[in-house]
Every structure is written in structure tokens, then in C-alpha cells.
Image (tube, rainbow, N blue to C red):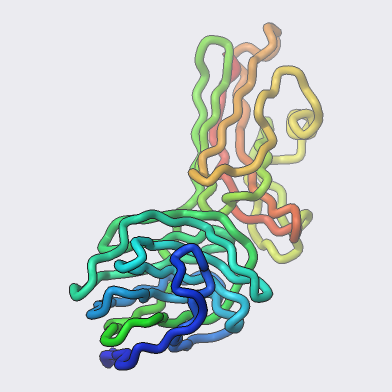
Length: 283
């Protein structure tokens, strides 16, 4: 890509570091329909004022912005919605000026991650802007240069699921990286021969939950004193946990079943991660 340089000291707004707006210069490109992407660029700021990137850009009053400012001593991720700014993350360690830095953002669903020089700075969950363009940002900085702009599909971190039986309890641990912030349900079945089409829940989802609709499956979706943590919301670290305190019933001892599940965005009734089914044995 060609080198792009901001040669003049363009800025507006209030220089107070506590004020988030900081209107300056932006170079916008891409498609308004872009949703999930990784956006990276090399940046060198010869000045000590603000530079950065914008993403999921709808317009000047609706987008996300990552920026840093050596003179004012910050780097931060902020959003503007309808002209109102909100701080999502910040620290007091701006990137040194006059040297090249690799800056990247990854936006997948509501999960927004920012990287600098190979290190993750932050990961936040925010669903204000689900799609939008990308761009380069400068505020009060003469001589800030941008090079090697890349926009690509994000790496896919797939869902995983495991189970173990220990001391009368079946413990389950999973990761749902695409479902952060969504509700999750874990279920059991005696069989996984045919599976359940997730189109029954979300007509847009062609996948199949590898569990069968049998009496055990129905039981797990209803209140049952032996089932612990079978519903919840996927936390920012994407880890979900559930367990079964197995009743002392001779008929269950040594019986095999299968555990699996999915995550569900309750606001849009859209399924996200499908947890692969795993075998379990009742102790």
C-alpha cells in the first residue's frame, strides 16, 4: 500500500485530555456492510499529539475509535453513538512517537479487540455498531504516517467442550468465543444419532446440535435439582461451566449420555456457537 501522510496540524474540539470527541482528520474506506474483520496498519507519528484508527464507521457521529496521545498521556478505545461519546477502555501508556508501530483491531460480533506491536491491549464487549467501514485518524498531528493497511477475515476461534466424571459429579467446561455476551444452554441426551436442526430456533442457522430429542434432553431444559449451571451468559473470557450432581440411583450408575449445547443472542434470537457433543458416564 502507498504511504499516506497527514502534513498539517488539523484539529478541533477541546484539547483537555478528558474530552473524548477530538475531531480531526479521517481517511475512510471499505464497505458499510463489513461486520467481522481484522484491520491492521503501520503507524508512525512524528508529532506528540493524537493518532489512531476508526472502525465500524457509520458516519462521524457513529463509530469506534482507538487513539493515543503522547502529550496528553493516554491511549484509549471510545465509541460515539448519535454524537455522544463513551469511553470503553483506556490506560496511561501511549505509543512512543517518531517510531513505527503495528496497530490492529479485530471486530467479531460484539467483541472488540485492540492490538499494538503484537500485544493485546484490550478486549471489550459492545454492540452499539454491528457493522461499518474502517479508517485512519489524526488529531493535531503534523507528520503522522500510515502504511501497509490490511483488512481481512478474522481468525476463527472455534468452540470447544469437554466433560469429566469425578466423585459423584459430572463437570463440564467449554469455550464459546463467538458467543461472548450471549445466553448459553447445555443439554444432555442418551443419543446423538440424528441431532436437532438449529433452524428450529434460528431459521438462518443451517447447523445441527448433535443431540437427540429424547426424555433426558427434555429433562435438562426444565428445572431439575441435580443440574447446576446449565444456563447463563458467556463471560468475556468465553469460558462456560456446568455440572451435574448425579442422584444416587442404581439405574443411572455407569450409564452413558452425551452433553452439548449452543449460545443464543436473545435480542436477535440468533444462534452463535455450537458446543460439540461429548460422552459422559454417570458415576
